[in-house]
Amino acid sequence: MAITTDPIVPGSNPEVHGEHFRAFEDYKRTHGAEFAEGYATYRRSLELAIAWHDPNYHNSAITRRRIEMIEEARRVLVARIPAHQSIPGNRGGDDRTLNARQKLISSFQPSTADEVAVVNREWEMVSQLIRTREIEQVIHTASEQRLIAVAANAELLPEVAQSINPEAYLSEIIDLVIDRLAAVGHDGAARVIADEKTDEFKKAWGRVLSEALEGAVSIGALSYLAQVDPDGASTIATSDAFVDSYKVDVEVDRLDKIARSASKGA
Image (cartoon, rainbow, N blue to C red; front, top):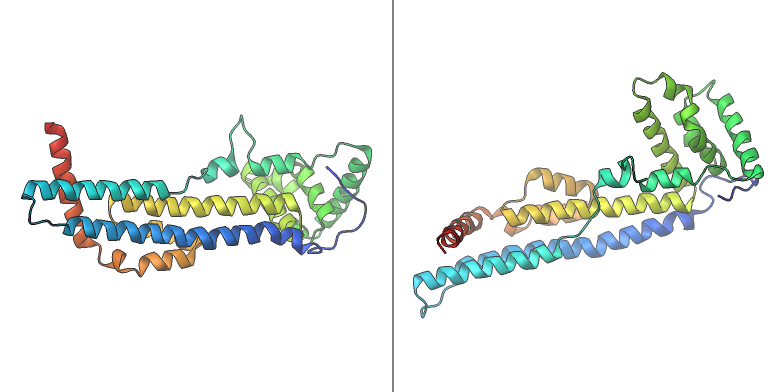
């Protein structure tokens, strides 16, 4: 861990801060449109499947062909569902594996005499400041050096010891530190947050597309998507495929039952 003794002005390195978030916004813009199109294509494929007809086919053959088209539409959509790590696994971790935030905080532990001196000096300043203000206020205006000192010594904060749930309060403090570090241009913190945003974006779209495979997309899934991709959620919610989906879903469900019955009888 490299800690300099030069003062760091909050927000002084916006390029470092912005690089990872620009990458996330680019990913969201590109892939959000792809996922929305994947949903629309799937719904159109279902409509085509249930409407398919050929006068040269018997009714049973027409039904089999419609079922095949539905299954093919599902295979195509499954291939477009984004893979993602679960948010709890990414942020919460477990006893065996450090998550990204924990690894970042662990890297702040001083390893040289100079680093120890800088951290101790900043921690002493923090100890004085929290006599007259909340630790959240200190973090909100802290420099990178001071934030690193808070992260390295957060367990010693009196607020943590006095909390009803020390572990949860400590986690909140660490989250505030990482958010502030990203804001002042810390590359590692910005990368962690951007990665989390990307993962949550994938998770939200994964839920919407997975529910679409089973029928109607729930309001809960759309609400979750709206938190990370408002434009994508709006595209889904206002599409004809979503608004007028009931009749299609009823017929697809009927064909699914026929397919399951045929499978059992085979």
